[in-house]
Amino acid sequence: MSDTLQADVTPPPTHDERVGRRSGLARLLARPEAGALAGAIVIFLFFFIIAPPFRNAGSLSTVFYFSSVFGLMATPIALLMIGGEFDLSAGVAVTSAALAASLFSFEFTVNVWVGVAVALGVALAVGFLNGWIVVRTGIPSFLVTLGTFFMLEGLNLALTRTITNQVASPDISTIAGFSTAQKVFASSFTVGGVNVSITVIYWIVFVLLATWILLRSYIGNWIFSVGGSAPSARAVGVPVARMKIGLFMAVGFMAWFTGMHVLFQFNTLQSGNGVGNEFVYIIAAVVGGCLLTGGYGSAVGAAIGAFIFGMTNQGIVYAGWNPDWFTFFLGALLLGAILLNTYIRRRAEAAR
Image (cartoon, rainbow, N blue to C red):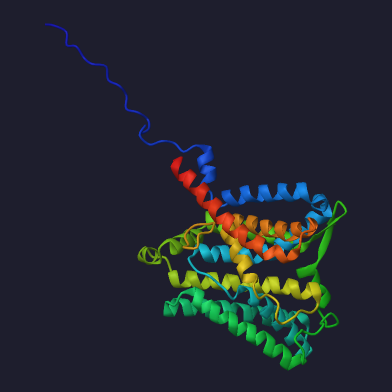
């Protein structure tokens, strides 16, 4: 009986060779903050070369301070934008929270911490109202918060003038509790002979917390899914309404926190402050990779965007340029960041 010839059996591949692996560079470029990081490096080197004062440690401390004040608000704004919404009242909400604490403490002569607690309630109520109206009516958050913006702006001016007969809040530095509140919200410390504001530490902590929420918790998955497609998210059981209201309240909370820093840093403030800052927060988030359509972005990217704003803000001064051109550079920065982010994202998709 003849032997039967058998073909060699090749073991099955351990992986499908048709599925290409993404390179490390492609994965890096696919991150939302990739474009912002590249832009931050370019802007830092630019001002480092042309503006000698920019190289001083004290100057960098100032840059970090300005970046942190705007970065605190840019963090929840980034989460809100990832969730598919906007808040144009965020800038004046900071002033509203500060005025609420200041005027309440002054008018009722109570401990400053009582005013701080009242301000927290006011800020959270504003955030809840914004979110509730958006969820219940379906009106775009752009329009809802634009209305809130004008309402808060008018209340800030009208109540301050009614209570104090002027457009600025009273000096509350002599009221009980001021010194302890100032240590919490507006203190500073020295590192290597350089003064560092406590807001820089708070900024880092809140960015890390927001990043953990986005990347390591089910709430982060909900935020991305709600921003990507609210109907689809609702269909798989995501509490869309509660998520959106919660994101607006997070903006309100940070508006309160930032407002407390402003109040205890300067003891008093003008009722018209904060107008226009909402655009800076949104710019920081967009520069950091957040899409205007929602469903994409990162808290780290928003932090880098705020740092870019801080560098540009102070770099123009250190370079000796006319500050009247600042808004032009801010607009150019926004446009350039959007173009750069779009280019990097397309390159990353092509490299997959």
